[in-house]
Every structure is written in structure tokens, then in C-alpha cells.
Image 1: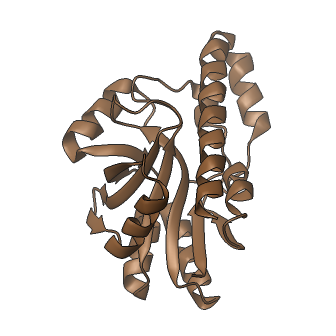
Image 2: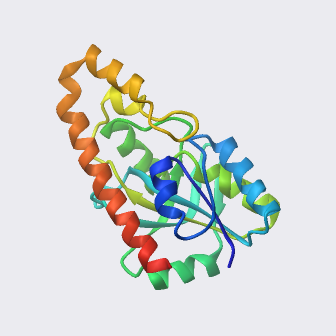
Image 3: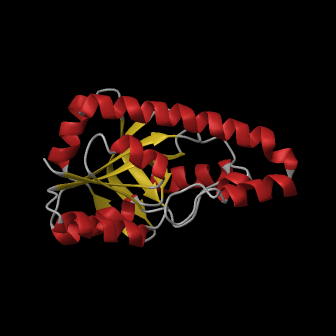
Length: 213
């Protein structure tokens, strides 16, 4: 299988490059995720995967929880992933939670917003790339799946410094983060918690890659 993988951050892409040479960062942009999917199709991929860390929506999923998304839902509709591809991933990742994942065009940063999205969509996680990839995959006639690891759990609010931390290419915008911290130093403890949760998620993602190789 020649797999095309779309993720958000460069850090995730480096981890996922051990699964496939076709890995791209959409930087939280659904349209860019769709463009990357089309590019990977032109390079001969026969399956597409939206993979990386995500926001937790279910209160039952702590940081590091692995989620296999069989459907992705957004304000634009509900799209179903490939059952055979999802089944193959589930066999290699028997502990993964399975269900609906939500797609958002903006970061869901508060427990109230997460709880609302969980109740409205019945979704386990939320990210910003999966719907774009799913839409492109269906247009291209290529099977796709969604595999995400919870970073910030459902009860965790994200500080403003975390919201400005990703640039459009999936890199870390250090200047914006530092500017936010200098403007509001009281958010530092919350930012440290987010960093620890993210490290837990990335460690889990590395384990996922080992199990899939």
C-alpha cells in the first residue's frame, strides 16, 4: 500500500514519515489538506490517512488516547471512511477507540465548546484537516481513514499562546507564542500543561507508527 498522509504540525510529519514518504502538513487548513491529498494521488498513493494529534471531545479519553475515525462530521455534512482500511488499522491498533470525529475550521479551545460539539456530533475528537482530506479522497475515489491521538482532553481549556502557536505551514510560530506570554504571563502554567499533554500525545503517536510499520 502506498499511503498518503496529511497532518497538521511539522513535528507530527517527522514522526509519520516513518510510515510513508508521502506526508504533508496542512497547518489546520481543510483546503490545503484537500490539495495535499490530490498531490499524493498524482504521486500514485492508493490510500489516504488523516493522522496526528487532536483535541479530545469525549470525557472518557485522556491525553494519548488513540482514536480511529470511521466517520468525519462538520457543518458541511457527514463523510464515511473506508471500512476495509479502518478494519485493517483496527486489527493493528486493538485498543483504539472508534467512532465519529469532528472537523472544525477553528481551534476548539474551551471545555464548554468541546462539550457542545461532543453532544451535537457524538464525536470523540476534533481536528481541522480530516474533512478536507475526506472530501478530496471521495472525489478522487481513493479509500481513506482517520487516525488521531488526543492531546488536549475534553476538560482542558487552551491558553491564548497555544492558539497562536501554529503557522500556516505547520511550523511553530515562536514569536507569536512569546508575544502572547509576555502580554499575559499568567497563562504560563496552562501553557506548560498543554505542552505536557502534547508530549504525551506525540509519544503515543510514535507508538502507533511502530505498530503500523
